[in-house]
Length: 182
Image (cartoon, rainbow, N blue to C red):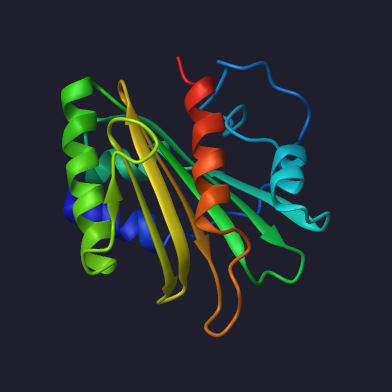
């Protein structure tokens, strides 16, 4: 489990399959299309940056090989046009709430290890975590478990650059997603 999360969370490769940004009714997050979690228009609004590109990859089959408890998964990325700073969201739907709780423990332990003990837990709800890192190519991380779902957002940045979003924006985006999950 630990190697799956580290490989997927820290080194996700985004496929360049562009998706639309039309309005999605709340509560209709779809793992197969990676739609319904966040829209491009919402990201632009929260970041205050009009030049953001939407990238998505559905990765269910890849992660099921590494963790049979994951029923569905997708990765969504929002980045600047120059492919510099970005926000990535990894969303996992587990076979049970217990399996999701195990996933949360593994993910939060890795995030805390990278953050050298600076990770804050239960800050924006039960089973949530956040880390304002700004080093090692990561600006910040915010994640949560809700039912059978585990969601993580992270801002990535090149060394010496500013992240595309600070931790407060990542937490706000995580809360938007929380409201959309069943």
